Structures are given as C-alpha cells and as structure tokens.
Image (cartoon, rainbow, N blue to C red):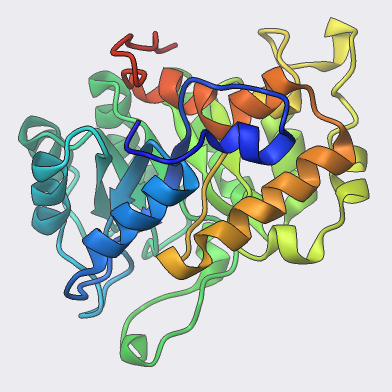
Length: 294
C-alpha cells in the first residue's frame, strides 16, 4: 500500500479490503502532476492506478511518458496504451505489449466501435491477454480539438455488444456505464461475462441510488438472473475516478453514498473498490500475493 487508511474502512467504518485500484486515471502533461497524483492517492488509500494519456491534443502526456511513470513507480501505476481506432495501426498493440503496457485505452474512433475494420485490434488484445478500457457515451468538448474528427455517437455502449460476442475472452472495461445510455449498459453487464463497468463521469452526480437498484434488478440470490458465471452486478462494477487529484475524494464520496444507500455488503464493496480489478489486471496485492486473472 502506498499510504493512507484503507478506503473501504473510510467508506463503511466496518470492512477491510486488500487493495484499492482506481481504474480510470488520465495523465495530462502538467509539471508536477504525478507527484500531486501520488500524494492524493496515498492520502485517500488508493494503492494502484491505471494510468493513460487522453484524447488527441497537446494537453496530454504521451504514451511514452505514461510508460516511464510506470517504470519509476511500478507499485503504483499500471500503464495502458492510449489508442485511437482508425488512426493508430493495429500492429501497435504488439509493440505496446512488448514495451510493457498492460492494456489499451481506446477513445475517439473514426467510425463506430463495432466496425469490422477494428476487429484486428480486439483480436490482438484477446490473444495477448490485454484488457481494453473503452470510453463510452458522450465526451467532453475541448477548444483544441476543433479540427479533429470526434463524434460521441461512434462510442455508444451498444456498439460494444458485437465485440463482446465475437471476442469472448477479451477483458472489456467500459467507462462511464455508457452515459447517458445507462439502461443498455446495465443489461449488457448482465449478459456479457467479459464486460466490466466503471461509474466515472457525471453518472453518480445525477443518478440517484434508486436508479441503480432498479437497473441492477438482477442482483438476487437466484442464479437464474445473473451472468453465466452466477455473478451479480456489483461483481461487474469497478472503481474509477476520471478526475484530477483535487476531485478524487469527491468521487470516492459518491461511491461511499451509493454503497450506504444500497446497503452493499463489505464483500461487494471490496470487489468494486479493487478486488475485481486486481483479478482482471493480475495485480499483486499489497502483501505481494498476485490475484488470479480470469
């Protein structure tokens, strides 16, 4: 652990957890940013962070800078290669893997995610065992991107359905629960065993706990309504912030309120905050024990 009280103790005052993993952390090209990020993570009890660049634009660090950060702090950062389908060459996947990247972050494709021309990307990731984190739903508008071909409609969460069916051994991490297409995302979470969703973005700001109770109706004791491995929805949700260090605590408070309102068990809270991600990413626990991947 890089410091601080374990976050699940902060959340519930009654549970313990081996590891807290933030699966959604961007790296802007700002001097001193990594130091601030690590200090904040230590204070909040975040053990590991999936780190990556962002959409095209000068404000973001390069993929090389992300990898360098993970080399300097291997017990903190898990490097993901930022990849734009339709712009980056699928052969870059192998190069990224050999360089030490643990997964891909994909964003701003030049056509819909389910385009067959992108299949070589997902095929390579599946073969190499590299998880893919997909941006889904609406994306922020930035002045420096005015001349770039960016369209939120190409990243609708339903376009991942074809990928999940075709590449069933590909670990798919899906950002923002498809915001605003939450209903589709929640049903895909149920049907696709290889899909996992974070709640980053504005979802936790405007969706009340009752919404999640309704959408995750299949969280029941009976196995009939769960995914093919008998898992409920909260075994498919992972913690991610997608904010600056100054806002990370606020996002954690959003998760805290949701956990309390839904009365999630300590075991499910632990799964959301890190245990599920540790297994998917084959990350070692603070004590050195490596979590088994699926």
